[in-house]
Length: 328
Image 1 (spheres, rainbow, N blue to C red):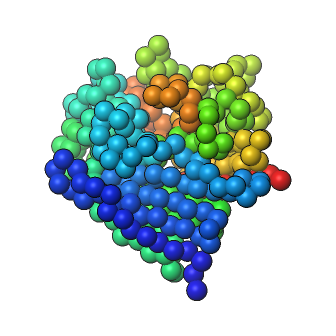
Image 2 (cartoon, rainbow, N blue to C red; image 1 turned 30 degrees about the vertical axis):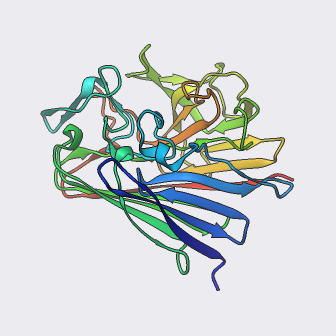
């Protein structure tokens, strides 16, 4: 008999009457993960610490209804960002010699997929807890959605290969060349409370993406050596303010987050080229979580950042694995 169990609960309806359902996968009282079809989101992830005490290590809003209230869910907590999760400066997207004007939602720029990007959509969901402990979310994004070209099919799968490992797989395909780079926007707090200043962070990156004063990519790569952003060795986050995109190295682990008092750690392995790290300084309760977004490199039209460009008629898959555990 499977040690996994799945429950589904109708938690409300959007202003348009669409049903919002939470899906919870639990494993023998050790781990419990809740997902939502609103934004294909990870709502919570409850894990034990070194003493067996369980806490939610994903930043969560107070009420399920808060998630589809844009005034309360200002940071798309736990959601899938898309069609492109990074910033498109001034909303000007150049593909195959054509210029597309994307919807603007952050100052004069297109950010996190636009004002009604994938994080604001109700996805179709299926799940299983027997042969495959997983939740699958599906979304169809029509041509000109938020200004993007092409009819895009997206699928996000949350699965547990083992009780202490969560994988997220992103599948996309499109009938026209487009920009497609999905990622998850969970803010992590391994203490389950307070701020993240007492956490330690390690990132396998020699460089960050250079940016201007508005955090827009400037086409350069900047060495982290000798700076406060050098996390190649495990380092206390402390009061360091991080809002940068790290160019991660391929290998067995791209990042580790650790909280010594509870013993909890979170290891991240991805096939994506970048890790966007944000210490949550702009959250309603600042620094209550740290975002570790495995993502495509930022869009910059003057240099060939082509990893998120999806050619017409093709499909692409990316995945990220999160292994959580404790040091005794």
